Image (tube, rainbow, N blue to C red; front, side):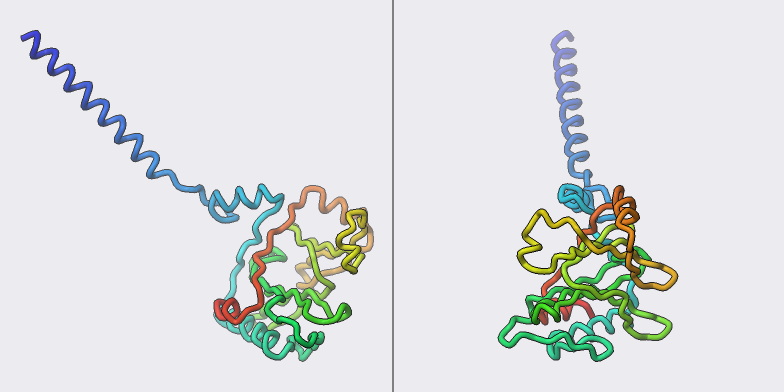
Amino acid sequence: MRDMRKYLAAALLGLLFVSAAGCADTKDAGEQPVETENGTGAGAEEAEASGGLKALEGELSEEGRSAYHSVLLDVYFNHLFPNDRVYGFLEGADVSENEFAICDVDQDGAAELLISYTTTDEAGKAALIYDFEDALGMVREEFFAYPALTFYDNGYVALKEGRSQEAEEDSSVQDSMFYRYDAESDTYISIIEKEEAASALEDAQELIIPWQKLTEENIDRVK
């Protein structure tokens, strides 16, 4: 009888051990990255580590996606921008070195088209933001400046006044031009007072823009 009790006690302990191990495995298998407004937990950690926030995708209708696709094709093949604007093209340059992104950079809930165009002479280089007017069925220019720009999560944009390569590499260049997205006019307005910009950027975080090379493959993914 005593041997039987010892056997039952050992068997019970074995069952408890197997059950505990199974629960631990289930917990580990069920743990997934926590979803945040900036993507998965891993993506958010990357953004935080780099000192910025990943720009949200924003909403974009099928008509808007098709329109952005057409704009990018025109830039790629003809170096032609909306409203027949031309910024030039250096002979022998690789057009795919230009970049574009589609995201909600002005924080209005809709996706804008960003283009950084640099395969031209210094005077023709351009950073542009377009949005799609669903009511009018057309692409409209929101902003134009010299590249490269720094975007913030409160709708502000900063542009270094030193445009030359040497100025960009010189860490002592502190002066910048600032712009702020104005929802009423759906455009960016220049900020004259540097104090206003400095105050606005105190708690702002830089946006991480999902730039892509201007290649046929990347353009085809837009439509």
